[in-house]
Amino acid sequence: MSVESQIIEMQKVPVTKNRNFMFLFIAALFSSPGYYVYLIGAEWLMLTLTDNRFYFGMLFLAASIPRLLLLTAGGIIADRFNKRTILFLSDASRALLILVLIFLVWTDAVTAFHLIGLAVLFGMSDAFSYPALNALTPTLLHDDQLQRGNSLIQMTTQISPILGPALGGGMIALLGFEGVFSIAFGMLALSSLAVLLITLKKDEEGVEKPTPWEDLKEGFRYARKNELVISVVIVAFFINFFFSGPLAIGLPIIVKDIFEGSAIGLATVETSMGIGALLGAILLATIKLKKPGVALIGSLIALGILTAGTGLSVYLYLTAILVGIMGFLIQLINIPLMTMMQQTTEKKMLGRMMSFLMTVSTGLVPVSFLLTSSLLAAGVSIQLIIIVSGTVVTLIGIYCLKNKTIMRYQ
Image 1: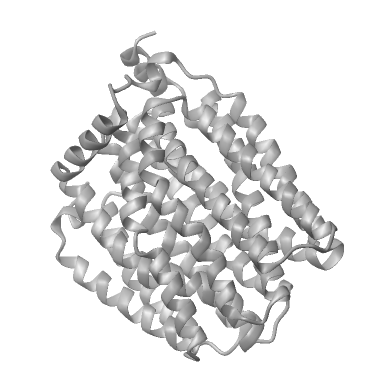
Image 2 (image 1 turned 120 degrees about the vertical axis):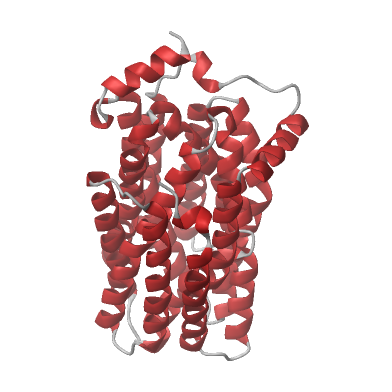
């Protein structure tokens, strides 16, 4: 079957009846929550092992640096090799890493440095799975189905902060760390099995380039000519610096140190974000945005305001409400952004463009984690850090109102 025939066929098959896409959806349904179950367990374990919050920040930094360094290679590999195999190896390797952690916890040998080392290996795995997943989705669906398909995949991603913290926080309390990490292992193992059920045509995988170096140069040439790619990446580059680090590191610390809460309290806040994000994904799976660029920028401004409000909050449940609304807004930013990129990118370039987007947009995230950790170590309040970060995100959003490439995108 030719590529053109496959595209025509994809038009006739609804997203929810597309066999390959549904297996991808099921795999993501296990993979993302499984990772979050592991993550909340690792976060709380780190907070339990040491009172030095610098090490807690290093948990995020350790994952982000190898992810950043290897993303470009991950994009090239996604365009040259079987994307299904890449996703399988990623989920299977993460499951094995969790088995190692279970052994360390069971033998009471786990240390902060073990958690940081495992975070490095998880970051390496992410660098290859992210471009493969986002390049595979538009390969399985027609362009007109991408917003809905991305929304469904995002649902699984955002069910993660719901099921992940709920299962993780509950299992820490009931079964201890061995229980929470065992659940994470099982979910990632099931995800890897679901990926194996996806079948791809040979011509869906694209044509291999003579050398990876030529692939890399072609990718950069293509990105430079795409005005939308440049606009989106520049905006995301600065947003991630002022949002990802302070919030990822800040929420667990606020719950434990400011609110004097427990793992259940952290689960409540992170679950709230997951619920908001899930509602945003459901909304975009049922409606089609006429002006996605306007929705993206408007949501960005509101996100910055609410982030600053989170830093001002002195109540756990008020924080959970604010974070829930932020989760909703994040979907109104991420899904249109991803759909714009996929719709305007040639299929053979998708892996490289997805890795380019994440590499550049998250380029400052390790610096953000390091700076946030350093400020905390210097005695700066995490609440002040979050207030300033939210204010800057708001100003970036207001400035982006001048960006006609994004604002006028149909």
